[in-house]
Image 1 (cartoon, rainbow, N blue to C red):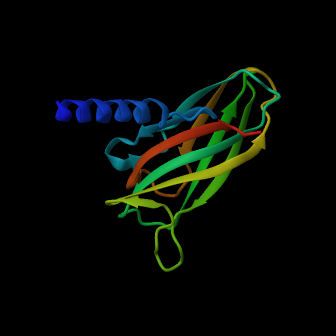
Image 2: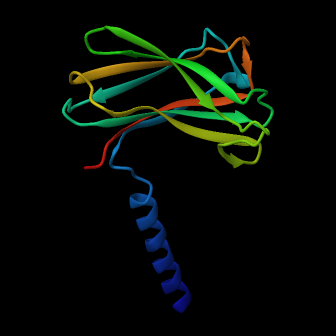
Length: 160
């Protein structure tokens, strides 16, 4: 009987942690897309749609990136295009530093993968409510850019 009771309590605790511990109430989107064969071509622009319900709220915007340990550069340049509900496009080029000069990876490592989450807009206010489309494309000399595993976008509300 004790064994069944212990199992029941364990199951309840696991259910509580998995249902409440993994949610992030401030995240509007936190989505990643896999790069096919770890080869990121110029033609492969990753698209993320973000619905903004409150244009008076401040947001932090991040680019998510995952590379393998065989990625041959210490940085990456990307173009991020934002298209608003008015269909006006704004394109900016960003550099993400991935490694120190001595080759030490700056991201969080897991096996042969290194993950990065880099701000590209802080305390940003969207100009209007509606759906915004974000496109992320690599802007390096290599085509395809090898050993890039995943690309993503995170938009979160700034906590008051």
